Image (cartoon, helix red, strand yellow):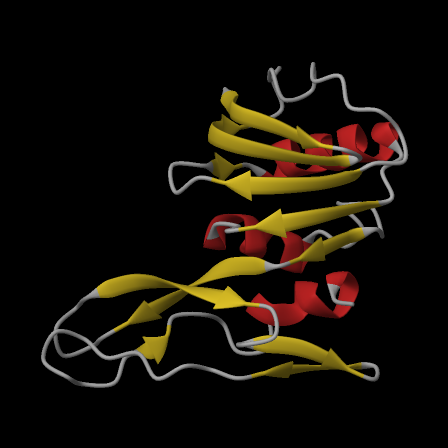
Length: 162
């Protein structure tokens, strides 16, 4: 079950920190009293995980709020995988500020999630999404590789980038 760790209200802006696992079951996230026409910032803690059903349920909850915009921060790579295969799971007004991307080093077998940030590692230019992959090194100074399926992981950005 997911837990809301912190809610801050700053005028019409709500910052909600979420941790735990979000599946098809209930969550205290859905019980939050968030007024319509607000700006929601969902910040996912490193301990957060989500199932495909949980992601669809989150989308239903966000649609019911009718927020002006929902900004996602620190999205785990598992959530990004689901979004790449579940078109329309979240409302159209969702945008991503940051998300984690898995990297792997074949020589050291190190696995690492690297935070990609809007404006630094990805942006939207016209109708195209532009990626700026950082150089990630393992503990031996060797370059690590993206640990993703080519052409699949970043697909969600086409739908949710502004």
